[in-house]
Length: 312
Image 1 (cartoon, rainbow, N blue to C red):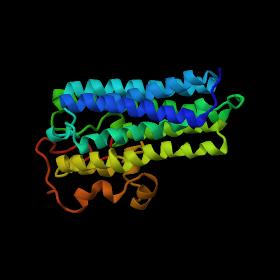
Image 2 (cartoon, helix red, strand yellow; image 1 turned 30 degrees about the vertical axis):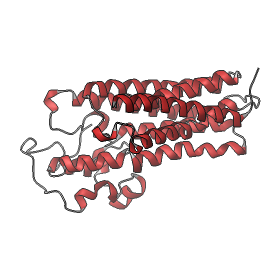
Image 3 (cartoon, rainbow, N blue to C red; image 1 turned 180 degrees about the vertical axis):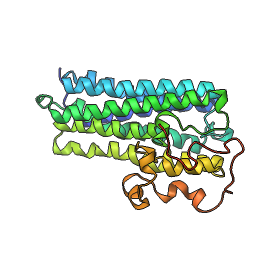
Image 4 (cartoon, rainbow, N blue to C red; image 1 turned 90 degrees about the horizontal axis):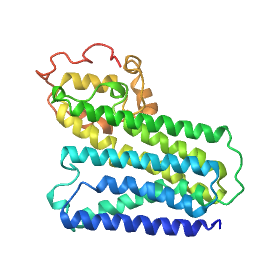
C-alpha cells in the first residue's frame, strides 16, 4: 500500500524525532554524559530518511538516491563525531553544570530536534509524494552532483583536521593544510552545499505546497554561519591565535567559507570578499576591536602566510 498523506508523514517524523532526542537527553542528563549528543543528531537523519522511504513504499529512483544520500551523510557524520569525542574525551560546548536535568541542557536537545525536523523536510516531502515519478532530468543529477561534492568535501576536511590535531608535531598550531589551505571552514561549506543539492533534486517533484521546505537548506546555512559554526570557531581561533602574525596572514589569504586559491584571494578587494565570500566583520571582531595584542609567536617566527602566496 502506498501512503500519500504528507501531513501524517510530518506528524510521525516530528513524534519520532522528539522521542529519539528525549531518550538521549534523559540518558545524557542522568549520567552527565555528553558523548552522545552529536551521535543522536546524525542517526536521527538516518532514521527519518529510512522510515519515510520504507513507509511510502513507492520506491522511485529519485527517492532511493536521495534517501541513500541523506542516510549516508547522517551515518558518516554521527560515526565521525562519536569517534572524535571518544578521542578528545569532552564536548567543549558543555561544562559540568550543563550536563544534568537543566533547562540549558534540555534546550540544546530541543534545538537539535528542530534542526533534524527542518533540515530533513525536503526529504520527507519527496518520500511522501505520490505523484507519478517523472524521469530523472538534468536538474536531479545537478542536485546530486552538488551533494556529492559537498559530502566529499565535508568528509575529507573532517579527516584532515582530525589527523592534523592528532599529530604531536602540530601541537599549538592551527590547521592550514589540505582543504584548510583554501578555506577556513571547508567542512561547513561542504555541509551547506550538500543540503542545497538535495533540495534541488527533491524539489523537482514538489507541488507548490511543498516548497516551504526550502527552509531546510536555509536553516542549516544560517545555523552554520551565525549560530553554532563559523562564528564560534572564528571567535575561538582569534582568541587563541590572534596575537600571531602567521595566523593574521592566514585570515587575509584564505577564504572564510568558499574554497578559493589563496594567491588570488589575497588580492581581491575587501568589498568583493564581503559580498561574495562571507568575509564579514563579525568573523574578525576580536581582531578588529584590537582586543588581542599583535605579536609574533616564537613557534612560528615566519609563518607559512607571512608575506607570500599560500600554497595548497
